Image (cartoon, rainbow, N blue to C red; front, side, top):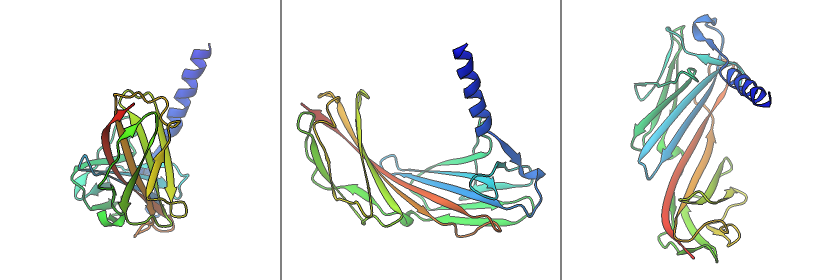
Length: 231
């Protein structure tokens, strides 16, 4: 009975998250809240982009673009999936500027653009130390200082997934040297590879709203390094 209850609860959550309305059923004057995301992966050399539209504000019902509407990125039609058909995404090779173009049923065209230069680069310092599970380690990063609307998360993990640790910094709590102690690494077994991941986050406003509705553009820039973990 408990298992059935959990299944029903999970189904209810899924149904709630999938709630949507077709743009074909909306009046032309109804504005869309626009949520755009652009994710740069430096080592993979790729750009992922995503879009969700909602009725009027950030808490509104998702809008599924009907036959009379569409959204493209750099001239490419969006991909979707059957579970979340109102979530639109793209996977592109290379680190690219991204142009989002929404065409509504009314024929109104709304354009918002993201440049790679909108989010600053982040990289590991040229000299990278040896990492040891019993003593911890510190390393440096280079790039433009974090601004008021930026943050960065630094995560370390081992290939056996036995342990992870992370640090978060922002414009008022920033450091160019990141340290992880032996306690942070106590469950990480020597002999495995250690992956160090740095992800820079930034939020920026739209260039073009849809009527009275606003929105946001979320940017991420990720870089990683893999090294041996010593005792």
